[in-house]
Image (cartoon, rainbow, N blue to C red):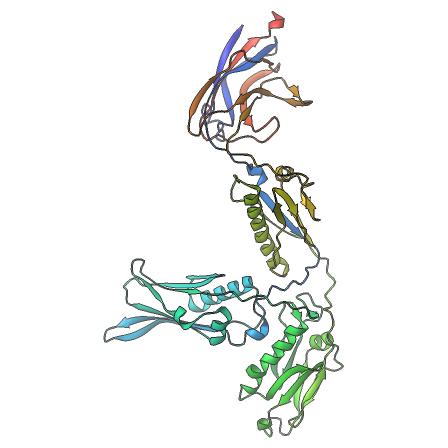
Length: 519
């Protein structure tokens, strides 16, 4: 007429290896055939261990950022082309020899290429050149420190790092910072060089060139030597003017073999002046050929590509500065995703900090893919526990539904700025009730929705406390009229919320009996 069935979450791990206390399936020794007569069941006993719980489920931890359409220029350059003329560094490793002599083990020097640098591209370029030139991966370029280190197994080596004055000035490095640290315990020699990251200088002048400009190979040369070419980056009129001015010494007056005395951008012209000392050499009394590429000519709407530079006069080439004209592309969509690092957040502020951090990482990956600026954006804000989403043109943020529901935000795809309709209440690590389900029950209705809940259990167990609960006068539910070969027991956070993961064994005792009204 009735029987008891004890179900343990440790009972069928060989068959169901993913079982855990909050969601497990047990394979029965023999099939229970409930078809011939109506049966009902109730939970009469439960043994479990108290534990803290996350307030964010695993399936809600994914953050996705979408970006589509043509990227817009947002100045994130901490270093511009004109500041890169003499950014140089030298590295040497020596070994002491008998007689107090030094033997060079390895040495390298490199100059950073002339281009604009965001912090990301600077760190990536410096690291890449260090590895390729110095043949070492022992480098770390962080926003507050440069770090280089070399092994010193026999304590007989020295490590030398020298930087050009412009590089030291750029990052606030003094000579005293370039003293190596000898770590005898770790058998290392290291440089830990504190730095100050250069600030971004706002530039609102006309954007004349972009990575997508239709006028490619925009450059010019003098006497067959390339003087300047636009890098595949964003260029404003001011950036171009400063770059040409700085090139005067590097490609002109500072080089004995150069025909240029100086170059500049002045009064809407590219101005070139030849060295009088070169008169009578390869080009005699002149003229010296100045050749513009088709891309440079079209970019600045110059009438001709070939110009003559004479020794006794400046050569002005009129320039017309206009907004960049980009190729007409079918701009693809870009996206990146990140998982949150934790699943318990004591406050909504702590959750927002991590969401914004994950979004920032996604935006940096997108910036690499679509050659756009590294400028990040703080999308989420906490204002007295009410969440505000601040949209950014061209970007969509996708959160999972439970997070949005918790934040009282409208939908999973956030584009326009919006504010939550109510204050966020974060779940605590302790759950006051467990909602226990048994899949062999015939579905019944709770709030007009079908459910297989067999019991709602009040939770008073402390963390680590093992408790046995016995339920007096249990409520019985109809059992599904079908053969039962296995039973799935699971515990949720609410009537229809996420499953709770228990780290220790749980044991349920279920009483089955024939329906009383059938006797």
